[in-house]
Length: 319
Ligand code: ATP
Image (spheres, rainbow, N blue to C red):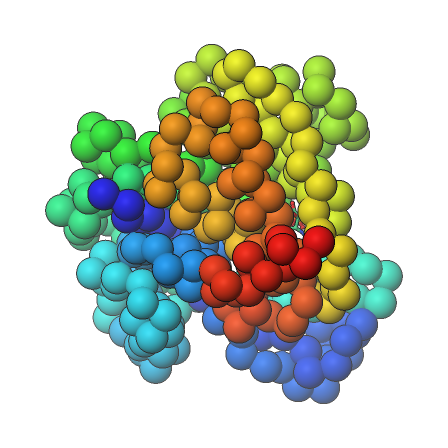
């Protein structure tokens, strides 16, 4: 039982054909399939692992294109349902010259928000060794209830729960609401991964010192991770904690690095769940995840830059 089942949104990002412009200045956009949970499933599959995606797409050309991308990448799409009355979600994204990311979402509501608990592929979710999710699926009903039910089904069936909140402030009615809802399912997860930005957003403190990170620790957790971009990451387990540096690479586009990191880590954990209790094994798994994240930053886009296992092992060997 090594299946990673990822739950949530899959959508199309539209990114400007030229770098460093605002959305208004962009002369044209390229389609970049994404959505963090879908990226994680594809990351696992690229590394040779079993992966499935659960979520809703529009019964339109874009939705069918995304489902085909899952299948072409070896991801089980048995949990994908199509909504005849709503469109596949779109997001226009740009990295402006000032380094700020600008998002504009078309979700009013989009198909991903309309998944209901009744539409869940229960048998598929029950086969998960790890059930992974974010927080965007918590923003609106009926998807929120479907998300909570899917977590319950996975947990009852013995899966580890993995949570990467993946904060997108623009999608929430307010910062307070985002914080409250993101933390409302904090205690259920076995594995939680946050970025530096999310750590500050959730704790209100701009620091990655241990005492700040520990504000997010719960006794129910097995592993808490804080990713630090080119600095690698810090990890906190029940009986040990530490930091693992990343690898030196030529960074081109960081989109998907966090998802590649999560996918790689989950791949290692399903292969050997004892990694969560063994510091040496855990550090090896994190090193593998760092390398996977690092490689993803060397090419444009998320899905096209997710590496195969051999590429990851090569980077580790070379270092
Ligand atoms: P995302 O941009 O996908 O939301 P994130 O903020 O969740 O990403 P990051 O910290 O940017 O996550 O990256 C995840 C992991 O990828 C890092 O912990 C690190 O191991 C690796 N990584 C990211 N950027 C670089 C880089 N420039 N050089 C080397 N490794 C990197």
